[in-house]
Image (cartoon, rainbow over all chains, first blue to last red; front, side):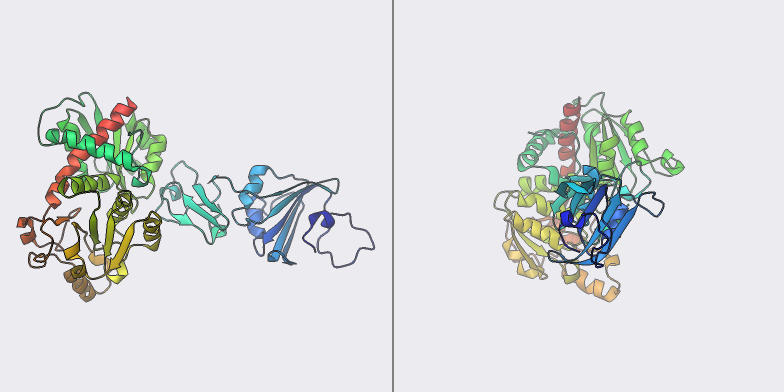
Length: 168
Length: 306
């Protein structure tokens, strides 16, 4: 599989070589250039669980010139909102998003973390007030975008590594 | 100018804001010493202490009462709405309806910030777990300014620099004044790298040593903190370390004449009682200065919120 989603999303012909791992989608979103091994966390951020009705394809650990190894997620018949897309940057700051309509890439953009992430990542400090039953959502300030450095608004504890472990 | 609605962390203070608090505190000091005032007549301070406190709680109470205001107290959490499972958010909303300002101490980090999001009136953080205690830092700065100097200061922070929240905030605030800081601690209780990096990033000269004798002759202020027994699994090791950070009059023989010794108190045995009678001791003055400094904050916040 190549890095270029425009090539990737060409409708498959019967005589197409057998190396293609996932068939292209007609409508929906392709999230490419996810760091290898992070695809399932991307699904978690998007709220896609085993109970979903959507057709979802996940490809993991594909060779990539840019990342060494990358994952790809394809969600059919769902065009991700900008807010959803940007949350993906938490664990895949190099990801690119391709919105597909009628088998064509109609929009291609990079993820961009907002300045604050609300209700997505919990604070790693067990003694933080945000990890109690108070009627608040976790609030993480984005201090650095790549590599991601978050700081809890409440207790100011930083979070840099293993962010995926703290996804809500 | 001081334009804050809440006092939550020293990191939210500029040098100009600190200066305005210290200047107002100086003008209020006569009232802290007993001069009559009705500046805060009709105003109410609510104390929400979810953890024990002596100096902080009583000095806030003294500050408000000496200015003619009233104080209401949540009292122990047992028997209150807290024990019935009420959230901090609700408690703060309710008590904020009774008072003009809330002072909160709570065991969870970030609790004061949460309180500020729900309170209808200003919130002062009087300690949130291992987090912040900004009024302690402000009274420390006031003490240094009154009893020594804030400009071109050479200070040694001594003791538990790893867990002591007081020294983290103080070091940060001193960096705003370009102080020359020496960190003196046992190897296992050094100041966290992230805080040191932050200080160096601000252009502050920071040195580290574990030998107190090395610095005693070269500083204007010796800021002592308590080394807690529970940080050491081995009691023998604790005794060894604690005794090497004990200040006695003999130890001070070579110190600068104008050296002052500060301590946030309570002390255990890190400063010998005989040091109290030397010209260096300032820890009881420091404790008293909590009153004018807290008076200044109450005035600024209540007037701002009025």
